[in-house]
Structures are given as C-alpha cells and as structure tokens.
Amino acid sequence: MSIRTRGALLVAAFLSLAASPLAAQKVAFVNSQRILQEMPARAQAEAQMRTALESLQARQQVMVDSLNGFIAAFERDSAGLSQQDKVARFTALQAYDARYRDTLEVLETESQQAQAAAMQPLFDQIRVALDDIRAADNYTMILDLSREGSPVVAFDRNLDISDRVLTRIRATAAPARPGAAPTQRPPGQTPAATPPAQRPAPQGPVSQPTGVRRP
Image 1 (cartoon, rainbow, N blue to C red):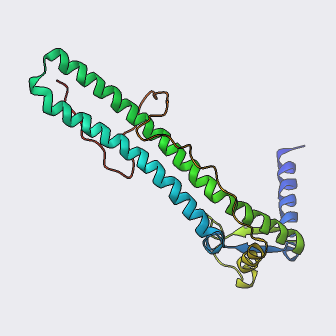
Image 2 (cartoon, one colour):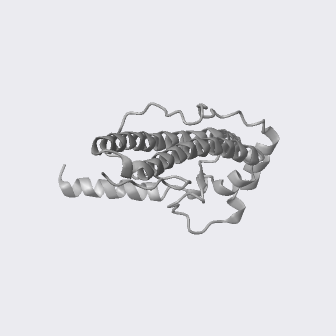
Image 3 (cartoon, helix red, strand yellow):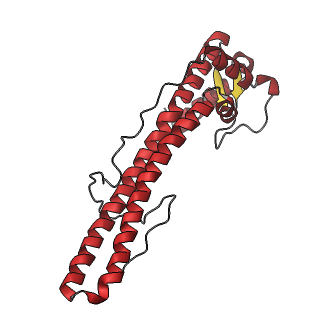
C-alpha cells in the first residue's frame, strides 16, 4: 500500500469519526470543587485534618525549642570551654540539627497522609454518586469544569448536574469514616529516619532555629 493511499484511508477514517452523530453522545458537566465545598461531611473532614496537623506542629515545636535551647547554651558557655569541648559540643549540635531536619521530612509526610486520610472519604462519595448518575441516565461521559486545564470554555448550563450530585450525596451520606491519624509520640521523641543524601532547608509553620558558627 502506497503512502498516499494509506494517508487517504486515515483521512477517511477521521472524517467518519467526526461525522458520527454528536447527539448520540450524552454528556454532562459538574463542578467538583463546588461539590466538595458543599458536602455534608466537609466540616468533619476539616476538623479531623486540623486536629492531626495541630498534633504534628506541636511535635515540631518541641524539637525547635530544644534545638534553640542547645544553641543558646552553646553560645553562652562557649567562652569558658576548651577548644576540644567546643568541638565536641558543636558536633553534638550538628547531630541534633540533622535529626531535626530528618524529622521535618517525616512530619511533612505524615501531614500529607493525614490530609489524604481526611479527604479521601469525600472523594469516594463523589465518585460513587457520579457513577450512579452516569449509569442511571446513560451518560457517555461527565466532565469536571473545575479541573485545571479543562478544555471546556462554554456549555449549556442545563447540562450541569452538580446539584443532582449533591442531592444524591446528601441522601446517601453516612458519617465519614475516621482517617488514619498519625501515630502519636511522646514530646521530644525523634522518629527514626534515614538521612537523605541532600537535606532540604527546613520548612514548616513554626520559626526555624538560628544557626551556630563553627568554633
């Protein structure tokens, strides 16, 4: 088959698909962000997430306070220490700082897990409602208008079924299942973590400790 013939067949196939009756494809739209904001279980999920994050921030603050205390003690005592003691104290500070940075990474992971655990039941409810409505009304597809990069620029407002989805969720809503809360550790206890090859600069909602200068 020549290249020209093959190209002609591809064009014919494309035109055939383009000519298929659009009316046969039943399409609907939703605004998932609006649905998520108005769901009955939203407040409970946010409260659960807030509780988990406050616990993580408290653990982080304990380490920040301890590290700042060690730094202040080192700077206060530095003038009266021998060079050997200065090096030993500084080495201990570096070790604690490394543990602190590793702990920040662990806390960040636990924070993401806590948020996912709190919100996943809501996403599951939306998915079930969408699947039920699509199957019941024989929709070919349901598009999310709030999704970033959505190709939809204009549409018939009568095709927006967000209200129907919310009504269905409210009718079938059960208490959101508890998410897996992060494991509680005694204040100041540092979780075991494998030091990364390159540690990022500490990030978090609390103030970072000041640095120390090498003796």
